[in-house]
Image (cartoon, rainbow, N blue to C red; front, side, top):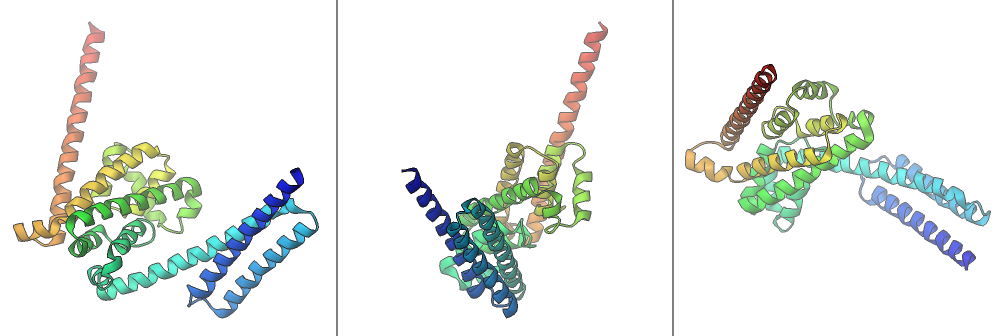
Amino acid sequence: MKKENKQFNTMKEITLHIVLATISILILVTSLPTVVTIYKISFVFAIMGILLLDFYLVVSNHKKFLKVTKIALISLLLCISVVGILFYASQFLVFVDKYGVERILTNHITTAKLLFFLICLFQPIILPLPEALTIPAGSAVIGSFTGALIGFLGSTLGIVIMYFLARIGGLKLVSKFVKERQLKKYQEYVKKNETIILTLMFIIPILPDEIICVGAGISKVSFKKFLLIASISKLITSSLLSYSVYLAKFFSLTTSQIALTSSILIACILSLSLMIKKSIKRTNSKEAYVTQSE
């Protein structure tokens, strides 16, 4: 019985290795046309070599080393996937620059919602596109309510992913995505009143979202607190930007002017709440001092 279980586990492990290898080769051969042929051949030979090593380890009864080859296959798959994501992200940016988000979504109307969700998802990670550009464009094609909802869900999920990349990978990993100079700016901004400043930075485009996520992840801001701040902020910005087309027509303003006015208004409200909070603290401290003196 034990022998049968061991054989089953071995077969399951080998099957997983074959699946990982197959996915890697498929992505490499079919989805990365710009990769130089010699590199493709090198990767394919490396993957096939690992599979041959797997079979040798099984035959020679060194099955404990299968974990090492699995890690090697996963690493290769991740490497190929990252190259693929960067390639298609750069291609997409070229299309956006040439045609604009609205036209791209209109030309792919059947998959417009999925495309818009992916844009919002990757925006805080690898797409240097401002919300003030993408969300109004998406809303113009798929509707304001749907645009606000998808924009909120996509951007919030992207922000969470970037936060955990920073939290788990640390500065070495995220330095590939963000500039150190901007990260120092973030740290200067949030030295005091972390909650208010984080909320303001998410709403007002002082720094890119990816910088805020990385800064929060590295500085060990609790996930619950970060998620609450990010969710509220993105709900506000997604809703305002989605309905900015109607507001722009009503007030005879451009979308960017509406976004800026809304941001300033929210900033004023948050600043006022911060002043009230400080005032209450001072009053309480004075009362406590008077009570101690008596």
